[in-house]
Length: 354
Image (tube, rainbow, N blue to C red; front, side, top):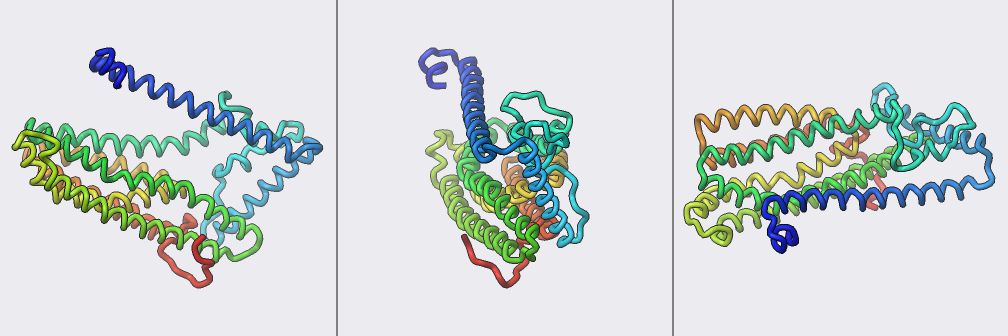
């Protein structure tokens, strides 16, 4: 942006090209990192199996697959559900029936740029389809807010731009907690599966999962309190630093408390969403997000006709935020035990936090 817009003076066209170039450079960097990581894994695999025949290596993978299935069956039996047959681990699925087939290709997909098989396409679609629905719901929700604010007039739209910028600035903690949840919870669940496969009851591992969730929840609440106070303070007392128009500033100050109430549940909500994502509960997330998007669209249509005011928009934003938090935590409470995430139960025997 600075080069193409500021130095070269390309204006809006420069901003568009800057976005395209930034995306391409970022993709090239990430693809390079992924390829290097795959090559490192391939070298480790070759070193681990040095001197072993292809038949021996295929037998080891088959044994790992058998242990994985045993763990899944034990977990399903413990939760009172039939064992899942869906692909859950790229190492254990698609194991070659023919021992002559290279095991390393199965383990690491034979490289970064390869034509996927039908099985791989189905697996990716089953995972990415709900994620696309989730992103559609999120994008539609936040994009439509600007159109609703525009219905209240140019002053309200300018105030909304300031308020939504503050909202995004003070809700970044939720994304950090969500990514952390998606990074840590699968490893803790894998410990539980390994314990079940080894014939243990897995109760200690479940307590570790609960402890981890409670730590995440407490941290999310602390972050939310701090960010809510900061968002409310900036909107109520620092609005004149973002605009010299007294009417715009007045609109921002008028809805400052609604902004704070909208920020308050965000961190815990997005953390819980990360836990559900790590549990592969994507169909539920996708259905709820799409349903919420349609309800939100209907409300905005009503608002534009009957109550085109910025305050009404942010009151609805508060309702949406707290409703979404209730949906995610309700799902964890109701279906968490079935997904191996009984985070709202407590049993003795936990090993403490690690």
